[in-house]
Image (cartoon, rainbow, N blue to C red; front, side, top):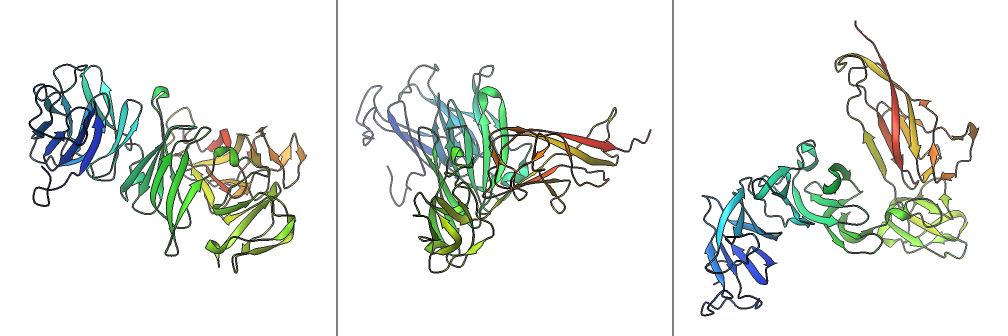
Length: 418
């Protein structure tokens, strides 16, 4: 069936007790419950199923996904093999293939979330959802990048799904970044953000965990490859267990020594340090796999710095449509959780070039540089801004400080032309 002349399988999946293999325009299902057998002499409903996809002019199999029904992603369509009834198993005599969608699929293994599938469209630059349409009694495709097409414009090379603590689809991109889709179908929630690091993410995978799934990445830094594990959300809340730095090393007991070793992978790099529940001021350069701090520390996290950026959509507030009217960001108020009040932790403005830090006050009283609040509802405070038609709110946070913004309000000034 398979050979160097005929070709080898390019798609594989398990579905309804059979091993399914696809290559070019053909699909083959093994003998039922005998994954290594495609013996054509096996008779009856348990016999192998070998068919041509033959649903259009371009239909080479790229992947196979087992949902409520099996879906074959081809270069020209998303095809669904089926029996005559939804609940009946497919057999050699009860088998047909029909197109559910004609988007076409890229050669990227899709992901499954509950009863839905996520796949990369033929262009490689758009992500689509496959879900069952109860009115059409078939699967239908919807574009998950329709509001953020620029997220995947460099191409998606790999998908991985994280289910805990939230459903997140990790997309390794052609530019070395990751696009992350927050996906909660039952709550009608989808939202994109980017993951960037000082290097290139070449692969991403997820393994199951109890508290939170483990997200693993292969990262290329300075010509070397490293397997790195994304730490849990609960380890980004401050305290001695705070682990917010890229490619970091965490030492639980440094014996109150000012020297931190085990940093050979960061030789020559500038690093930041969080130790004993607070930021160690300044930056340090790794030499001979070690750094020396100005004082002894016990628990310490050393790694590469990074920053997180948020830029809002265009701000619009008036009795009529003010999209082309001059406006200015005046004040902002935020509700925070597990957030450092350091002047270096969080900044606000209408551009990333001119920003002010979050005021270090609690109930009107100044607080220390190292305070991390488990909860805080700030009073509104002024932010730098200028009059412009395209007024937006920009927020920037910096490692190794923990920052979690639960909600915010913005006061906008408007030149009303009426």
